[in-house]
Length: 68
Image 1 (tube, rainbow, N blue to C red):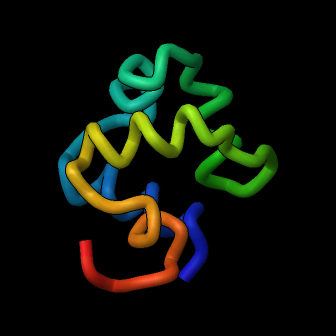
Image 2: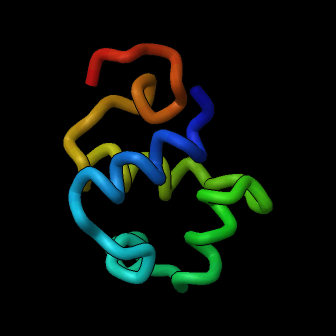
């Protein structure tokens, strides 16, 4: 599984909108949407923020493990 699918699944599992997650990342909904669709690569600072936000490991988001 790629990270785009993981971040989409995490967001929907937590009943969040793209706008809500984008606000946590201090970015726009449009930029965050591009991460989920794979049109833009997510910077490491946003990966770190999402790990803390969802309380999961970077390996999980990156699809290297299924253990959160």
